[in-house]
Length: 498
Ligand code: ADP
Image (cartoon, rainbow, N blue to C red; front, side, top):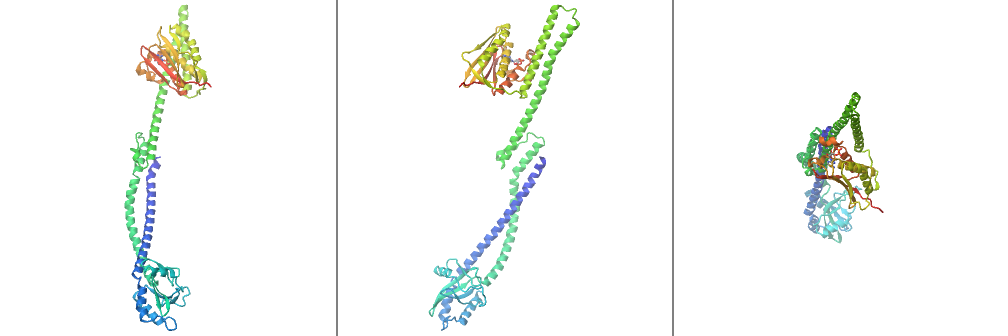
């Protein structure tokens, strides 16, 4: 865990750096390519605009002074050759062609008659468009010397001695191309180098800041995880919602809370177990010691004891054996419930009938203590859906307690009442009541600290009741006032017949 935490940040930073550099390089290359393309276009368009009228000048100036055609209709090559040489001497980037009205090349000094690849005619489409919009729009036309390329040009129509055609001037001829590509290469190299150095500088700067910000939260989380790992259980990520990785931050905080909760639970369960063992050994030891004492007395003083005394001692022995066996049974029952070994077998049964049976069972005990024991609201036969033997056990413990903690002339009632989809069962007595500060703990066997109460019973009865309630997904409530009495109330789901 700590190893992962240690290596997490540097590895992530490395990846971020790599991604950043690749991104910047890609952007740089795209930037240079786009800039180069547009710079080139801009240059070509400027050149074309600037030289748009070159072709018509040639016609205006030269064709009026002398005809470029001889009497026999052939091209006046000396005249036209001079003209072309003059022009190309002034502007070395241009190449001049004389075309007929179909676009076929009549003459050009730049064309070598042996050049088989050279184009013999030029498409008229671009030329006509050029002439139509007077060279105001950027347009590319054929380059006879490089048939696969399109070039900027200037063109003008002529009509001399019955000959019609065009003067066609490639403005970015081979010479232009040569110079341009050398310069462009240098320009690209300079631009590339400049852009690279600058972008690298900015990359490092922005990268450092960006990665610092990006990993800030991660560092915070890693630090907190490490602190938690090192034993600081209170370590939590502050303001997890504000974090860029809030899901992670929240999950960590929740996980840490769960771990701490579970640890607390385990600690308290462990503490309670230890208390239980201490209590149980105390509970078992007392009746055993009493038993031992009386049995020893009976053994040693068998001769001197009167028959009545013997009878009394045997009676005490008997009741302590009863206590012991009851305690052991309850312990066994409770530990089975706590270990979740008891699976409730729920079925419909009449809680009214069960209550009558129990009242009948405890009638004698109640009479002995001069306590009135009765059922309230027994009008209808209430059916519930629950585990009959577990419910019987719970009711038995509650009635037993009610009788046990009620003085003679008191009253214990078991009331059944339909409440919505449930049947409410209420066992009320007019007994001693339970001090308010003890009420929250009476269902908790381990917490029982009242020594006087313990003397009267095992302290397991209500803990068993509580477990039974849990198995039925219900709870039990106690309402009690010292010296006035107590009510124990719980609900069971009513069984809907039909
Ligand atoms: P015990 O065997 O001691 O009765 P229980 O778990 O049944 O154990 O009860 C726990 C404690 O709750 C008792 O010791 C007693 O102090 C209190 N208690 C339970 N029922 C009543 C009641 N009906 N009236 C007064 N106190 C009661």
